[in-house]
Image: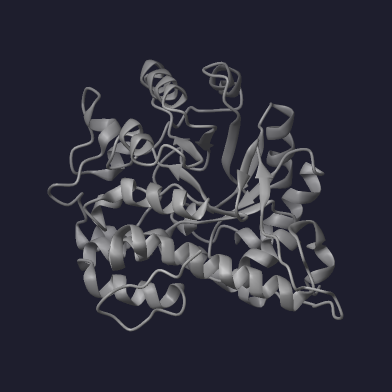
Length: 358
């Protein structure tokens, strides 16, 4: 992949450089909405610290002249174990919004997960990058017919899995947004809400929650389409095991980027317990605090099949639209390939728990 350059700025060397650019270019309430989390933001910080705390034990005298990042995930062939996590309202960062993100994912051979709270309809995103592998993240509506229509639309538009977010029965307390009196910026729409009676208006909390959603509803949800159902928002081994027993095709370890229950366990700390409970029966994805290729390597060593990034998409979009998101993917994939070579791993199959120091 040719390196994407961002015009008019010093060459960003890592994701944090892009965040600095984004912070300069975004309005403060928008930056705070993206960067912030629940209450004291302890879990936001803990997600990053948990990966930084882990140490790698590299192998030596391995021929690493060729490094293979490719994997197959739920029938999709991906260029690297890196997923774009569902994040809301990309139009807050760039006019091309999720269409730019989807094109970047397609160029990189990465998997896009489109949020229910997207600023572009799922059909328009699919049309913008028809070859891109894509999943659709689902927030259930209490009106089941609305949920059923949305899932049917995703299946018709060629999305290849439904990712059900299960850690948002109600919205967490996000104090940065309260201090800023944050509302959806003028001119930014929430496409899948405006199409329905009642809409979403300018209040994101109107999108939150289905407090009565429970395990019994999974049978209904799995029956809505022939698509695999991924459960996102799991941090406990017992929940992960039950999810697999209930027919989940994959487990997504996530604490919503620290935006829901503050002081929730960091995802890198939760991952080993979930991996033990799943016992290899289905793939595991993890997000939360991943900013370096070494973070991805550690996630894979702890039992994940792939790692997902959320906020970095916004930093890339704000910096340079599609090219900025491409740069995020290039950085992380390049860092992962380098980390694998230095750790003595030629392919994802050679990454195991022994690489992470106890």
